[in-house]
Image (cartoon, rainbow, N blue to C red):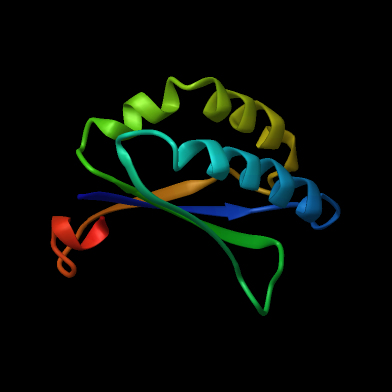
Length: 102
């Protein structure tokens, strides 16, 4: 599995719009065959901070995800909502193994 945590800091007045756009992207992303999970979490003590937890089946699947219309629509929609550029960290799974994600 190829896991990406995307860290996003959103402008205070754009939080609800970011959540709506990201949820739409998430609903479409989990339909992709290469996506095992696509979670969007909001920091409790700072509601302007989010982490997107994206779990892909292979290292090639994130690139395929970025080619989809729903990802491009999300990327363009949220660009001006961010307080700073988003960052990401890539991980490999330890537990569960690949079968545990199904």
